[in-house]
Length: 179
Image 1: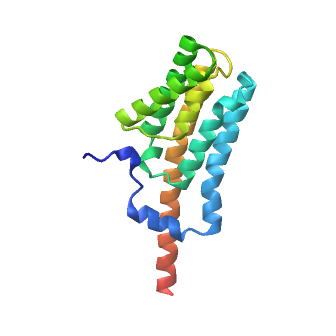
Image 2 (image 1 turned 90 degrees about the vertical axis):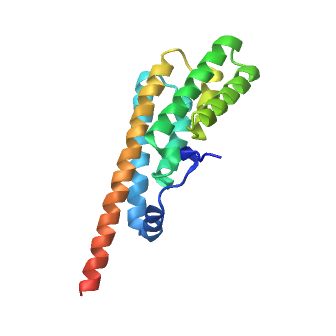
Image 3 (image 1 turned 60 degrees about the vertical axis):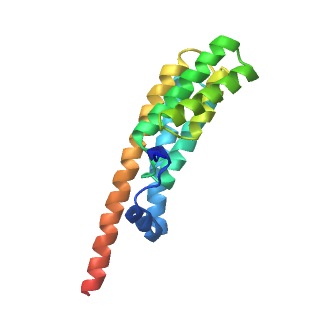
């Protein structure tokens, strides 16, 4: 059986680094997702007032903070899963209206495509429901996709921050060893 990359945790050295992070460093890592999501919410509020539609992106941001190297949190997986979910939800809404049938069809479509394309990102299922139940108007789809790109940048920011913290941790150990 082939391994699915979107279901694989980050590399072992980074997981060990994460276990050694101080509370201050953990708070620094959580600050980026929080600021990004607050920015996205303010952006969305200014344009559409459809905050609930973007709740799944907050869940994605937390998963990115928790393990930015995990396969489900890479940029490809994040973008593919949420895009499929938004399109599936919007499409089933157009076919069935804002009802349970649209929600069920959107969820099944999203899950099938995520597994089939090896782009498993659980918060995307919420995205499919938000669009299937018609949260807002047609303009929300491009707005959501734009917000998704901002969250995708978070993956790169979190990975970079984790790398820098790792380098700083290594420098601190070397400094203490030399004393």
